[in-house]
Image (cartoon, rainbow over the protein chains, first blue to last red):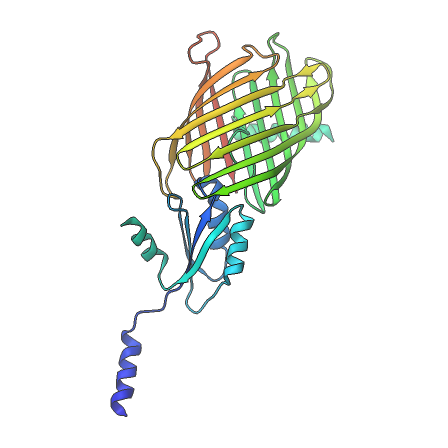
Length: 105
Length: 220
């Protein structure tokens, strides 16, 4: 029993911190000046930790603060209000920086 | 009311020092944003400011000054509406059909009175290519500066969202009662997420009419 408790405690200290992001493909996003609204609106969310926009690959990433959540429908509505359409969106266990690094490869 | 508009517009024009054009692909910002845009050339200057409460609709004020082929100087100060009639969001591209119209007051060397400036614009843009066509009426008492213009261009390379992207753009424009009535303007366009700046030379191969032109847009 002691061994199990010790193992659980050790795991809790060694496990990487949980990071969640919404990663979306956004249609129509071709110009930084025009897409500024996306970044501004997402950054204004209280749940927002970081925002990453990639024009070339039409990717928008909203990294969430720990234990925070934004429903995908709300996320899509923000993109829609900025004048664009979300063609696909998913929640991934990665930071915006990690996704940026993946795309850069 | 119109005098107040004139003062407001003149103030905005002074603050901008030069101005910006209404010829970029985006004629308004995002929801709950303010956009300032304008254009400054030798015989035509325009500045416009609008507020967009929701995406697709914007309301604002505009001021323009023209000098016609006879040297008559005329100005229009107006309130305007910009509407996004249709937007096509595609993977890797965007096309828009816009309506923009202003009603206001014309004054200057000619007769004063009611002025109106309706226009339609179509644009298509990718991260590397750009096309725009625009038809605009600009009328007042004994005044007609109707214009038609097309623009095409390309970016030298793709950039990240936080970088400045350079473009080469050429515009051909006809405008009634201007000299010359047909103008070609090659320009270097710089697009950043915070600003849109275009530096061009109208009629570069005609020494008599060669003039610099600046366009600027700012959204906040």
